[in-house]
Length: 435
Ligand SMILES: Nc1ncnc2c1ncn2[C@@H]1O[C@H](COP(=O)(O)OP(=O)(O)OP(=O)(O)O)[C@@H](O)[C@H]1O
Image 1: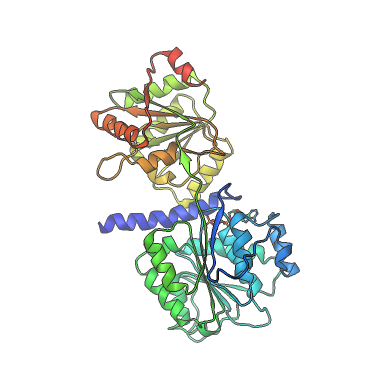
Image 2: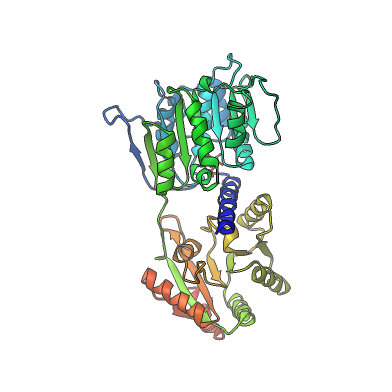
């Protein structure tokens, strides 16, 4: 169980970093934000432009220089709340790519008094890499405000005990930040006026981070503004949020629902992986496929399949488990740009990646959980479309055993949708499915 947990921890942080790297623009959503105000009688402010926020010119310049024209959905409400006087606490939840980081970075930069040479804003992130990534956004947005300095409280950045930090903003991981605040006394926590806890869901998935975060929070003055952000909101995240953010305002943006309504689903009967490969080639021979994503259960199958497809003359990208997050981000980026037409991947590598642009999804192996049952959620995420943006799509499931047929039946039952059989030896029949 411990090993599995470690994998999950790694996965969550890596996934989060990957999402940050591949989201170079805002994620589309038509859902409305939900706002729960601490004081329901106070007027609800929201802004449609950055000007309305009366930011310092240097900051507004930084915002526009990043190519932002107007606040994102979540920023419309979160920014006025975070910039209000007196400061208000906030818990905000929305999926990756909706503008949370940009929002709290702007809030931190606005709060700083650059004439004071001590730490005033403290932001903690779950991993070294995530801290660096957020640091980059701070540097970028503060580009025209050079008086404000940033320090990284991350491993490897060694400072002497008692050395006083001059930088006004500190971004770091919980362990190092805690050391700097308590043991080493490099930061005086009593002088912190904004505290940001980013990626709370990833944070609590890592052993020890939750306690460290709480210990840091307890050293801060009561009037310090506390802000917490998370992509998901299970009960455990919520409990944690309530412990570290007193009297919060709450902003939530629901994820766009995925449906199978616009997807044509088929299955193909085969006897082994070679036959599955032949079926795949037949499909490719019969219809024009702009871009396809192919899912395999193991790294080995994925590697084998990618090699076989390459032999057939396809330009294939392979996402594989031993790759670094940077390598994965590069591959996804290239695929999105259309440089490769086929992406072969295992589930682990591709969790959370949007495939909106892909018209064909092949389940070379069906998604299943650790007990060998159908993993419906993953199936939906591989194939499903968010109704209002998604184009029509085609999904083909490869069946090569009683077990995989069983999984297919479970999936049919779960979604209450029939998955039709496709004979891949019949060219005419394949052609029909593409119309
Ligand atoms: N108002 C805006 N207008 C245009 N682009 C924006 C705006 N706010 C943020 N972005 C861009 O959208 C992308 C996602 O934003 P951001 O990183 O802040 O989202 P996030 O919710 O924090 O997601 P993640 O946790 O994955 O970083 C970034 O590339 C960011 O530069």
